[in-house]
Length: 148
Image (cartoon, rainbow, N blue to C red; front, side, top):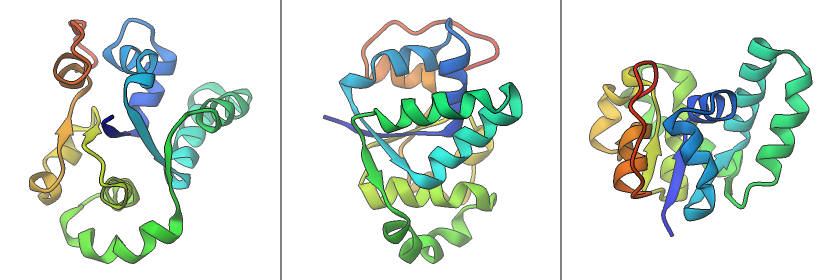
């Protein structure tokens, strides 16, 4: 089964908007093994708190806690932060990139185009949600303007 790091935006879009490829990914999360870290979970919680209020923090915590996932610890991430530091311009993305590498993930799914253009792009198997739905899940993707 593929190991897949889903970026924060996939969880946010997928849990917030039904007619999106991110939602299709989350509905089919049993077809791959999601990779998470405490950095990711905290970022997801903070985004939902900012956008929808503190009531969402518990829901997001329950959702991420109940995932059948690979959890990469801070202790696994910290030693490799320096290795990829020069390849990741936006430092808030660095723990996510290191989670991908620490877990030996197969794919990194994101809508963050800027991230996919950083120097690290040659080392990471980036996919946008549409590509992942079509090429990995083998499901007809939705056409969308706001979300790839």
